[in-house]
Length: 85
Image 1 (cartoon, rainbow, N blue to C red):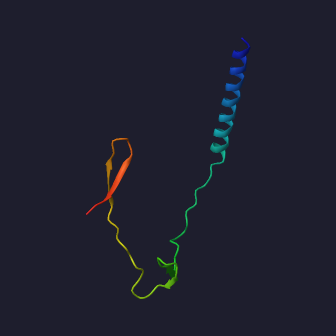
Image 2: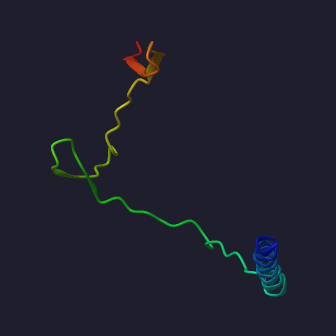
Image 3: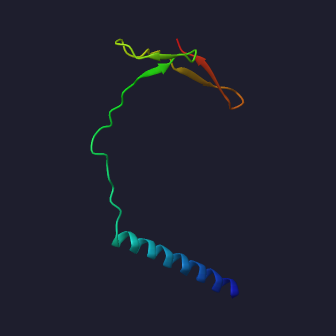
């Protein structure tokens, strides 16, 4: 009998707290604000593979295209990867 009273009390407190939160949000909802425009980014340089700082030239940034890896399930549940051709 004591456990039943405790459970009902805790559930009542939770219900009252949830109602309080809902009432707060209904009475004063938060306004979502977006940025007025796109943010401009100016690139001044980059670090190459050796860690040396390089300026951005009129040719732009260097780009390397990597081929995706194909995955094959192994017998023990691990994944083995191999480079696709």
